[in-house]
Length: 133
Length: 145
Image 1 (tube, rainbow over the protein chains, first blue to last red):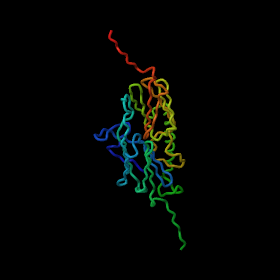
Image 2 (cartoon, rainbow over the protein chains, first blue to last red):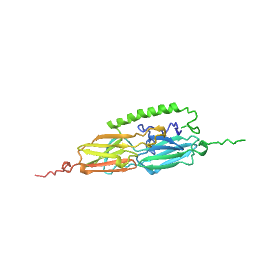
Image 3 (cartoon, chains in turn cyan, red):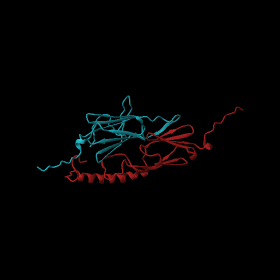
Image 4 (spheres, one colour):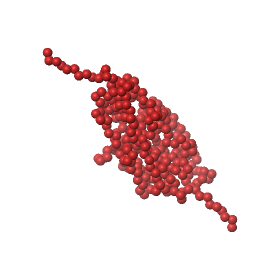
């Protein structure tokens, strides 16, 4: 489920960079997806992103998450070594029909975005009683 | 994984799942090589009498981070928990590193262990370390003779 969409732009590995004029480079955040019972959980690493700047949207069964990194340089310091850079995290997933797109819950804590997706009622297994004629 | 199909029914993904769990075990072993240390990614910043190391550590609780400072070496160690401990959860994607980590970072100057301050915000840990007083560069005035 929640297959990743193939996109030419914006879907760049964290280690590679793609410069765009207004937002800086875009990174593809590391993601865990697991399923238990009727709940699918998507856990996305977004270090340096404040909770209110996270954007989660669903359109045409495509789930997109975005977050701009807001990690200012320590005041009075100059950077002498870097392994990560400021920019924007972005990733898109396609939702299967079995997911209720209207019931997605999102929380952001310590730089980790957690999405809770529920299976739609129609997708749940149903027991059909056989009546005696 | 099998929507609408109960496990008692035919499960075409059984083999796949087994393969996946084997793969996961493989990657788990790989994660342990974090001990040799390239996680977390860090940036380094230099000030007048101090140095700052910032590290991307999303989801690591502050209590799970161990910092050691000696001379000109900083060691960031700890444990990063899995997103779930549920045994029967079905994994579709597992990219976030987890497990024990330890990373040793060489600093451009010797620091005083009493002058270390660490704070975490939105998954970024910031460690500020000051130079020992005795080693601060001193300005020497040149007197006219």
